[in-house]
Image (tube, rainbow, N blue to C red; front, top):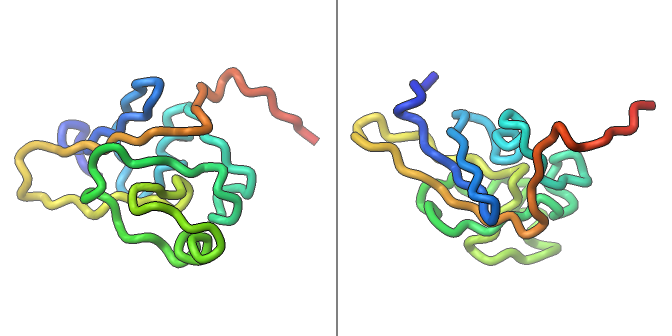
Length: 122
């Protein structure tokens, strides 16, 4: 596991919330680990598009689209800088880089802290 000083920063706009990457975890999962809620009506399977984000900085830090995200794009085309957070992984980090880079994403549907979310427990 990368030490905190070697992890990339991810900034969620418009709220200016900044968190550290979790290698191998998609953006939706990183948000959840940090008690941030991004909409994801399909449960994070790449079917609904409610977790769509716009990449403002760091596009070159992203791994290629997953098969599920490519399938979604066939039905609902996305721009190059639009991604599904449930499918979005960062590229493996180059260990020779001295300073960590960062990624900034705009969450059109917004984010909120999970502690304020009421859940229906059936």
